[in-house]
Image (cartoon, rainbow, N blue to C red; front, top):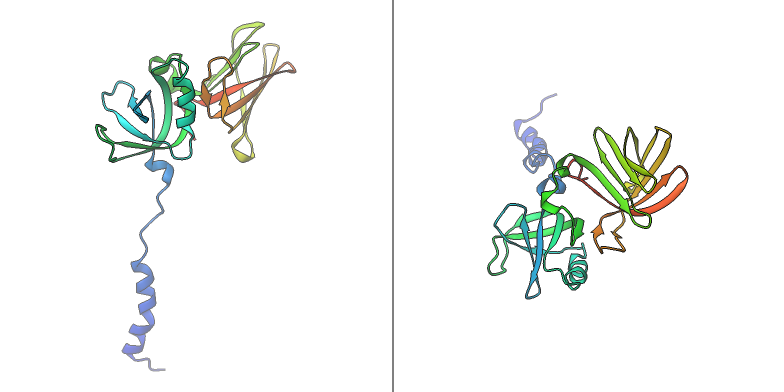
Length: 223
């Protein structure tokens, strides 16, 4: 059967058109964002962020993070500077005196005290959880977890991690006579004593005893 060249060209036009609008793989919004640690201050109602060991100052846009309210409460308690661990998109801003803008998507930690920029273990830490009354803490790295509790000196333990629906985690260990279950949920959590805000809530079951607290991802994990 004879097919004219004109008919063939018109037949292929939709195919060429569809190829023309293909722009490659979609960009992951998370990859266009930057996680930074540094100092948070407020001046004339504007929140400012200075990264650790960086003289620049960025004007904060809080997005849906609620950092304006949280920082207002902490700064109102007599603290002039807060340590902040944040994720967001760097860009330009119209705020006078700024070196740029920082549009936030997540607040990992906001605290008035602690090691802050001077924490030597931050980059190696996967997760840190702690609670009060009684005090307990669990620090997790790729090498294991270190448990501190009212009845124990810091104890290094191996662990297994299970990822659960809705971004929850379960870390378990059973060694050296200890049965440890650490349950993590993506829920804003406030330390009752210091007022520090973290992005995860934590429940520790130590040999069947339940203790509650807050948690945040370290530098070795930020998803």
